Figure (tube, helix red, strand yellow):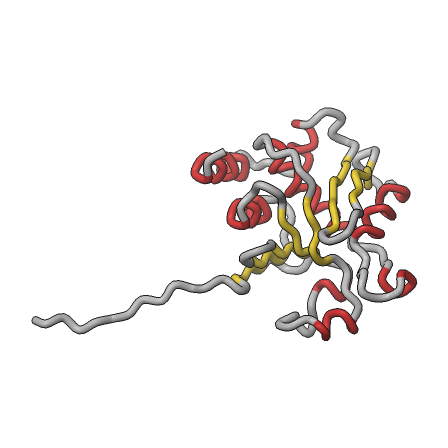
Length: 195
C-alpha cells in the first residue's frame, strides 16, 4: 500500500470513530484478542490470546506476552514482570489497524520491560522511562515504514506516548504525548538577498 493511501485509510478510520470495539467487530471472533509478537535478536515469537471474552484478561496468553517482553539483560526472576494490560491492548489496536489495511505481520519488539540496571546502561534512555514500569514497547513491523507505524499508533483509540525513531517506534500507556527521537530535523539556512 502506498503511503498516501495508507494515511487516507487511517484518517478515514479515525474520522469514522473506529474504537477498539469497532475494530474487534470488523475481525472474525472480535471478542478474542490475539497479539502476534516477535522479539528482535532472539528466536522468541508468540501468537497469544490475552482476552477471549472481550472483557477479562486470559492469563495463559497474557503470561506468554509478558514473558516475551521481559528484560533479557538480567536473570529471568528480575526481568519477568506483568506488562500493563493497557499497553498490551494498545499494541493489539495497532496490530488490528495494520491488519485492516492488509498488513499481516508480527510487531517486532526491540525493548519491552527494562530494569533500572538495563535502563541506566542505555545511552539516551529517559531516567523515568515508561519501560521501567512495564508500560512501554519499542517496535517495528517488517515491511512497514516507521512513519506508517507511527501513524497507526497515532490513530488508535487509546491515549499514550509515541516516539518516532529511525529504526523503531515507541508506544506506551502513559499520558498522550509524542516526540521525535534520533531523526535528523531539517534545518534551513537564511541567506541575505543581494538586493
